[in-house]
Image (cartoon, rainbow, N blue to C red; front, side, top):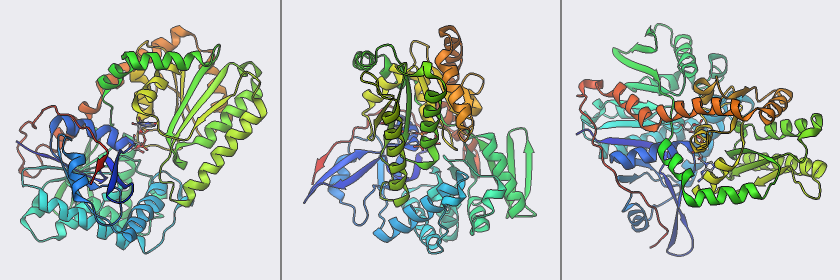
Length: 494
Ligand code: GDG
């Protein structure tokens, strides 16, 4: 049996010190974990990643926290400087903004690149220590684009392992990628993988365009959606694999008694109002201020909306240690204050703002209770919230307003109301369109979106990727082990 080895920057939980010898374990919130965790729980395997604390990793609490996970967990340690330069630095001040087309937000500090390489080498070492030649090694996301190169540089038989990579965030077009000082080194590193997966056709197109421009002489063979790059006497496969969600688990969760009751309570708190939901990690790529400005514009230009619509905006704290994120939160706070100050009445407050993560039941209750989802990232690899919203609309009602720059737009575009998040007036008009849409039209659109999200779910995603990687490096295409387990993470005392 091939074993699945997932390698990502973060493990699916974070350890934190809660006092002398007392540790807390918090499940991580984010798209990568939401998608990959159920897969590993079902199939078993190994997850290599960082548990979120700088310095020495407390072995006892880690072992106890992962005892019932259903898969092995291999922690990678980072020092404080590495965390600052690799994670906050190169990953989140260079790659993240650049790949979301926000080059003005980049800090191209030269010291970050060596730290990025060094930490990627540590992950490569962890792979070498834990992998067998027949294992399926699947490296995830923008923090770890140098891992394959680091592995190939190590002179061990394990460097012949077949290595696959999936990028959860978008890949930018050449004109933007060309700003990156390490553009050639990064592409060279990516081409050391055997299979490169992206979220959408657009990302694949951008990547191939960058390869052609930055590495002249590299051969790209394309037939339909199949692309092969010939590089240094190797063949690298390139494909798009739109990530999905565990549809059944969202649908069943949404139908549960507890969620039904919570959603009814939520609805009852806003009589005679349509509820509109925005839910995002705190991130400047998610278009939260633009969304609030569009809502303000809609209330200004369409007085019929006043007292009839409430925007529930959930912002999950994320990367708050980075000053830019902190300032960004200030902008959101001010906009919410401005809207509520200008339009509230004694019986209606237009924006309900939560700066905290909701527990799963509460999140599902919000998906079920809200008539409209309003998701406007400036750019997004996929946007799983859009798919989760559809999965939870068990009554097949609900309208989805979605940024045309979210990867999910490629799959949902006939039925979602697509908007340009930079066009505040168009977004405001679209809010009104969704508000006025007849129940019959909402149902037709929602049915089709649910069909798509159900079919191309997370297990479909993983199967497509594993199939594409099944015959790499002479690997046989034997089926992967499938089993069910349970992954519960608890707070533990050392
Ligand atoms: C990256 C890419 C890509 C949200 N609020 C709460 C909560 N969430 C969960 C959602 C969802 C996840 O967080 C967010 O996923 P997204 O896909 O929307 O965004 P990123 O975190 O930026 O993910 C993205 C993804 O990777 C997968 O490839 O789609 O483009 O940027 O699953 O449910 N979870 C809980 N409480 C909340 O309040 N528990």
